Length: 160
Image (tube, rainbow, N blue to C red; front, side):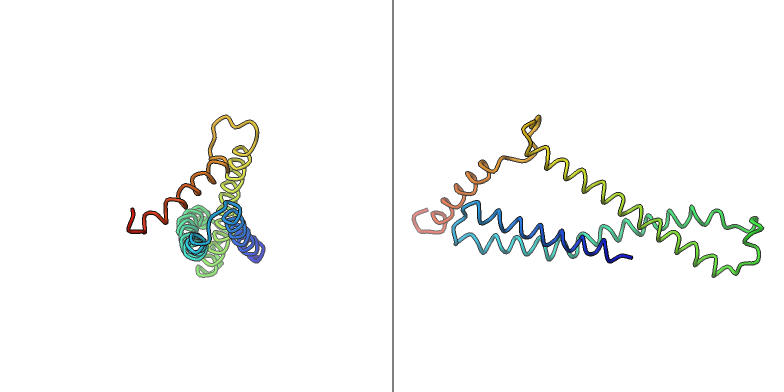
């Protein structure tokens, strides 16, 4: 049942890469700076996305799993007459399985909330309402990148 979230994670990774490369091309960067931009894109996609994200989600799963297992396991005690004839290892396996399912639902719920809040921030930043600008306008980004691109060749020469 994990193929749907994994599919959407892979699709999001491809979409982020395409948007980043498209914004690089449209920003008017000269060809000399383009390899550095591709390196940054590769670093963020391969290193940050493939290692940092699963590490954070894995750590969150470990803590959430322990919390949910203790909450679900508190019902299964020696005082419960319904569980008196069930072997302990079977009860432990059922509690762990149920805790894993609940933990995964909780983590995907939190990730969905973060994704929706991020989408809301992006939509508000590009709307006409712009009460507090969160992201700079594309015109400002292009102006800064052109200034950096013009200054880059001067620094590397003997004149600078």
